[in-house]
Length: 310
Image 1 (cartoon, rainbow, N blue to C red):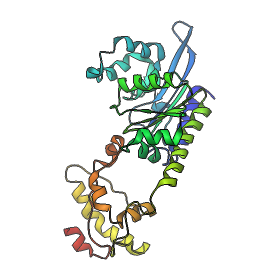
Image 2 (image 1 turned 90 degrees about the vertical axis):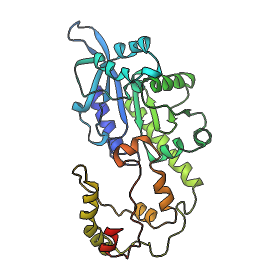
Image 3 (image 1 turned 180 degrees about the vertical axis):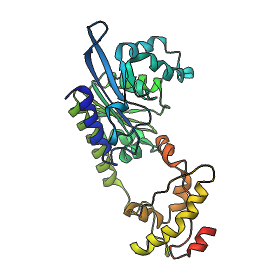
Image 4 (image 1 turned 60 degrees about the horizontal axis):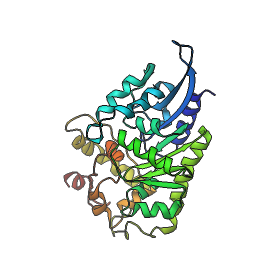
């Protein structure tokens, strides 16, 4: 396979499993040489998932293609963190040919890290460590020296410099946990990069499972137990037009209903209200889910009319 074909295959495999990243979250990249059609000389390129794409359904049209020499030359003109937003526009001057998709704000992370293949993902297990008050210590306890910690910094050029520096200082590391954000892994081959990403995700899952509370959301609240499947779906169908009407006050929206086991467990528990009020734990999530959910705080047996008024 070509370098872009390898990247697409890896991206689709990672994005197909929601344990690895949320919908449209994260990005992947690969570097390789091609012949420049103008000079007929080798030029090193980077293919990276463009802005707004989804890993699970990514195609080659969704990749941004940049010249690596020009991208890395931006380090010499970087004006500092106070003006790093200007760097996103500068990525357009690094594009190769027609360039493909628009480069995302995470492009520097991929280009500045000295690795042929890089994955940046938002797995729930990684975010649990990344957003914990003692995340750095937990990362060390979970991974030892194989995964490093990077303090919170908003996505951008400086974060790319930070990750590159941490990788250079920790040659044994297969990746990093980004404080308040997610994970980044790398490898010399596409297979190694994917393997390292999955190792970080699965090891974090095992670590959390071994230390988690039996009832992390508290006990079940009497009256808020899940209804039988047929009955709860009928009630959801009755409420859907009301909820969608409220959500569509400013613009049209499409609703999605889920009654998965994890959702039903959360809705029936004592800590539903305070945890929902806290909002999302990761900045990437509220791009899709917004900051916090609306909770209809009524027993499952409440009538549809009462629920719509509540």
